[in-house]
Amino acid sequence: NNSHPSPVTAHHSWCLKEHSNFTHAVHTATLNTTPMRSFLHHILAAQAALTIFLATSVNAISKNAEMPLLTSLADDIPLAKKAMSFIDASPDPYHAVQTSVNMLEEAGFEELSDFQPYFGKIRPGGKYYFTRNKSTLVAFAVGEKYQPGNGFKIIGGHTDSPNLRVKPRSKRSSSGCIQLAVECYGGGMWHTWFDRDLGVSGRVLVRKENGSIEQKLVKIDRAILRIPNLAIHLQNSDERAAFKINKENHLCPIIATAATKALTGSEDAAEECDGWTEYQEPLLLQMIASELGIDVKCIADFELNLFDTQPASLGGIHSEFIHSARLDNLASCFLAVQSIVDHILDGGLTDDEDISLIAMFDHEEVGSTSANGAGSPIMSEAVKRISTALNAGDGNPDLFCAALQRSFILCVDQAHAVHPNYAAKHEKGHAPKMNDGMVIKRNQNQRYATDSITSFIMREVARRAKLPPLQDFAIRNDCFCGKTMGPIISAATGIRAIDMGCPQLSMHSIRETMGVRDFTHGLTLFKAFFLHFRGVDSSFE
Image (cartoon, rainbow, N blue to C red):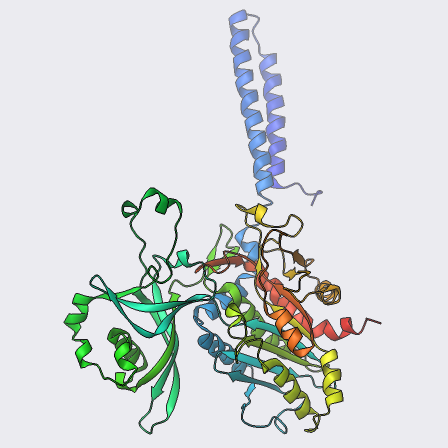
């Protein structure tokens, strides 16, 4: 406010005024002697230098006073902390789906069975979800003004992240150490997995007394595994210069020493031979059984992965960053779930003519071509079954095709923020920044699904939500562009799509970084998409 100078500016003026008064007083009192005059000149010079220093310092303080303080992010922190809790609770796709289901059920969503027809169970104003393989989730809410043939507003993400997964035969040992045999899943930055405190999580098949098989989730959130680096003294100069990893030999984690295993009585001779158990590390089975409160003999099989036990944290001097595992892509999953819950709680279904839907797929990091991935029939089946159920069970293909043409998929996967130490890796005009808003991803070779129509729609949605202008990302011509879900889903369903994401650093590292404010940007955009899409889409001639 220019009419009310800040205390810093006022102090600056006072310094200059006092300097003038002091100078006048000294000159008035000056004796007409050369030594005294020389002495006073030294005093004046020192005082002038001090005044300049104070004025310069005050100017610097004044500029720094404009720097955003921690409190300027206060409105963003609660949502960021909620996202951090979501990610910490979701070390694998199974837990990510279960954590999401907990949020949905708390908001009143009802579960649908894949094995039963949807007709008679879905109604306008209702909210529902179903899972596939416990690692893929679809949730949707039907607008109260829905009419057969109306469209779907879809937000898509993925539940998986690059990690190390326990091999079918987990037993492995070397040089007096008990290890686990692991396999690389996806394109991880594997050097970041060294010297980390690693836990184990995933799905366990448990054989019950009546012969049925129960699926249970396990999460051992303590440092039971570690992949140690080789000491620098044991490496030659070439090895130190290029940290090369043999993924088969160098990534096996240590779980115990052979001596300790012998003391526990966990000897291989006591193991049951059933074609599976004898190939598993007994210490691993005992740990899982203890965690689940079952007998080791009840474990029929498992799908386990390793994860970093360090929880997500706020970072930066202003707490403007989140450092966490699996930001790619659990940040998007959290925002998708939270947005559809908020859309309902805010009364968004009252005047809604469409169906708001979120879909979180497994196996994106390995190409999406699986029964539970974005390349599966899950999306097309969901749209068809829901449309049919809301059309009195009549699977009218004409109405179904009309619904597809009125639909839109916002595929959300994290984007690459410009790295200050490697800025040249970004195309100069397409270098997104953290905390500056969400990113539209474009590629003319169809690695991303975005085109001018879908790009405009989301820019207009952002404008109506009073968000900062959306950022753009395009890969350099001399770099390879990865492919995500947008083109895969769009090609399989015929639904228009856009690829977007929150900007982040260190993608596919065991520990990634993104901006706190981008959670707020993302949630606001997703909610605005559910609210404004139909109006924006209807503006096209």
